[in-house]
Image 1 (tube, helix red, strand yellow):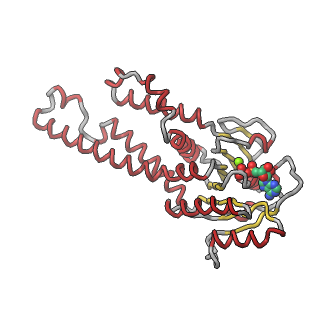
Image 2 (image 1 turned 180 degrees about the vertical axis):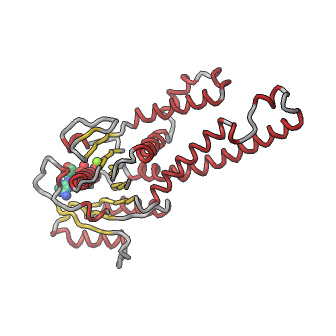
Image 3 (image 1 turned 45 degrees about the vertical axis):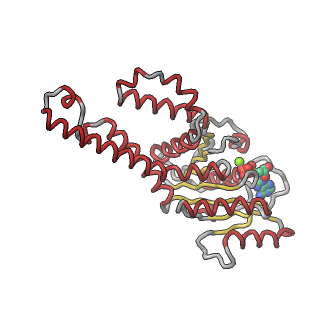
Length: 307
Ligand SMILES: Nc1ncnc2c1ncn2[C@@H]1O[C@H](COP(=O)(O)OP(=O)(O)O)[C@@H](O)[C@H]1O
Ligand SMILES: [Mg+2]
């Protein structure tokens, strides 16, 4: 499965280009899913059909999905509370319901919800050829893309702490003997310890997402317009992707008009340098003045630039 992310400032044309990209891939015979991670969805409007939190079929090869981050955030917290109550039976004494509402609004939950959606798609939708992502505003997108790496570091630290706990338990077990009350009950081998198993599972999932984002099968495109504000925002995306070590594959200079040629050239130069090294393919997408309804049928070969 290959993935393609469309990033950029609000209004530059991410949704139109990602929809067109998904449509064109499906028309070439590839089984494709278009997922909107932007809370301000417009996939349903673009395809003039009902689209929900779960994927739905639009045509033979095209599936659509508008991720409901509120719902995903609640599911994410519920699942974690379930894990806690399964792994630590004594936590039943805590009133988790009391925390639930607060956690729902805590910083980072939306990013984790998006990461959960992304992880699930990568793990489960293996029979798809392509997944195209329409992304939220720059800051949130970069935070989502940064999360796998951050999470791997955190989970690694937790695994080390857990390992130390298990070693201590082992020592206690050796002193007190197999039948002492505590030593008998508590696991001291990694493979018998439910907490360690869970941490390993979570770690593996984040590693998989991280590898998928960095790998050859992922394409990240930045969409911009030939104007100053979208230039500034695109610069932030490009710097952010570099910091995260994620490769940028394509740049779409959208809503291009001949009369804006000088501006367009300047924006491209500022973004990709005087002599682009060819690692990023830059395409100019002409402004379509017709204001047509079916924005997924843009008259431009989007696929060619991102594959
Ligand atoms: N190449 C284009 N020519 C004309 N209008 C466009 C073009 N690309 C996008 N638009 C229009 O610009 C507006 C914003 O596009 P949209 O795809 O929703 O951007 P984003 O998802 O980045 O916010 C929409 O009204 C869309 O129809
Ligand atoms: Mg959009």
